[in-house]
Amino acid sequence: MKLDRATIEKLATHLETCELQAQDTPKITDEHPDMDWDDAYAIQDEIKCRKIARGTRIVGLKAGLTSHAKMKQMGVDTPVFGFLADYFGVPEGGEIDTGKLIHPKVEPEIAFVTKAPLKGPGCHIGAVLAATDFVIPAIEIIDSRYRDFKFDLKSVVADNCSSSRFVVGGRMGDAADLDLRTLGIVLEKNGEPVAFGAGAAVLGHPAAAIAMLANKLGEKGEEIPAGTLILSGGITEAVAVQPGDAVTLRAQHLGSVSVRFT
Ligand code: 0L1
Ligand code: MG
Image (cartoon, rainbow, N blue to C red):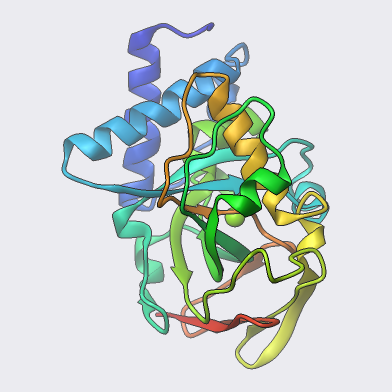
């Protein structure tokens, strides 16, 4: 690691304050160009600890930048991982107050819920499918704290991978019965289709993103516990939203999930 404990705590406080006050900031690597991956995940962990200390519950995990469309959109080349806090969750058909966010974008995703622990190294798609209780459509709302979404990967990881809100809904599906590679999705904004794709856009198979996360946690001796909700990453580019927009994700075999922005 290149940063000392005091700097990690200072950066975590800064990024979390930006999140809670909906203020943007230049990317943190501008002032700390030498920070490494361990520093970035340590800052993210410190943000998580701050939330837990205030009584926030961690309700899930996420993989981000898992599709070529997203990697190309953001000019990066590696998936990243973050956590979901209880207040990120929005009920299906619910409203999101854009006044509490900086510059939200929506992503169509397939969420997994596990029924058995998953531990790397060596975790693979088959192990993920065997450990999956069900899959369900999800809209992730990302809101990078970095000005104009201009960042590098280490800054993104420190910022909990732009996590801000998520909605799950539609129907639960049995991952073993579905071909998640060919499962099609349409993302609509205000009744108009704005993005299309299929599960294979996520690393060839969305379960590969979950396996990658299990292998990443395995490096630290950690695992994905049974009963964990995990967002596998945007199937398409992220789509910007404004107050007044209504967004619906329609997923083959899995119904639809909607959210409105005020
Ligand atoms: O969920 C995601 O793919 C977000 C990853 C972070 C980068 C971004 O803000 O687009
Ligand atoms: Mg996402």
